[in-house]
Image (cartoon, rainbow, N blue to C red; front, side, top):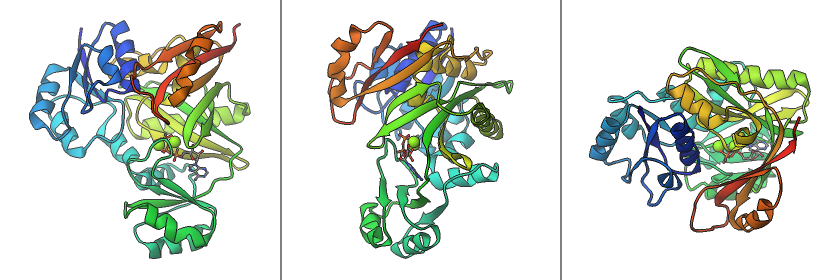
Length: 350
Ligand code: ATP
Ligand code: MG
Ligand code: MG
């Protein structure tokens, strides 16, 4: 069988490797950090920094195609890899999703609603942005933010100076605070034939900027459910996307607002492992390897609970629950805020 190269060896790379193995593929992980979670389940690991050109070339030579589990791959590494092997999803999807400013401009160009925003690279233009957008607002780094890191809330204009200082001169974006009733996400897939399949939108609850639970079905109207899925399809088609994409949405009185997109399998799609016959990981492997997409229809109601840091101590009790599927990432060190695993609780069975 073919070998799939995966950039990034975290839990997403691990679950992609397991899905790939089930379909008869080999996986080769490229990861700068030592002892990556994916290393325990894949066929080969290359441990090297993204600056190591020889290691990148050897990796590319050893695989048939390349995909990734995180979006912040340096452009220089992508240039080297792309000249040797196909990369799915494509460079445009990465370019758009690596930078919150480019991402919002792209979404608006598709006619999709976003929070009001302004680029910020000085205290003076932060103050101008606040004058235009108002408070409350959120200042976020344009790049490299995740799990709510690299962002600060601004409740009143007087907080601008402290907020600006906390960004340490990183290029930033000010977003108006969206008054949402719920947060939902759509996990969508597209293959190279242009077939699109979206999973049922999940409803997300965050604690301290980190995803806490995803529940399906989301408590939204069928009209909004359809809007959410069509909007995800629009994004997938516009990017000529191949693979799985996560779209985070705010539900407001005036409809759906796109928060951000992630060009990869997504934490809020983990429920699909036990709620669908074909989960997001298999769907991604199918898409990037030129297979037909599977049927992503949901067969059960599910609550996905992230096990973060010391939550891992819940495992013995969870293991006694019937219909609680436990997924652990094999991480040795427990740290606050670190995603250690998740559990999918089946809420209903037909
Ligand atoms: P992720 O781990 O999902 O990539 P992130 O670090 O990229 O997270 P965001 O998704 O931008 O961060 O924000 C984290 C959470 O903060 C959101 O899920 C939402 O709850 C809240 N939030 C972010 N932006 C806004 C906004 N403009 N208005 C209201 N709430 C917001
Ligand atoms: Mg994000
Ligand atoms: Mg987010």
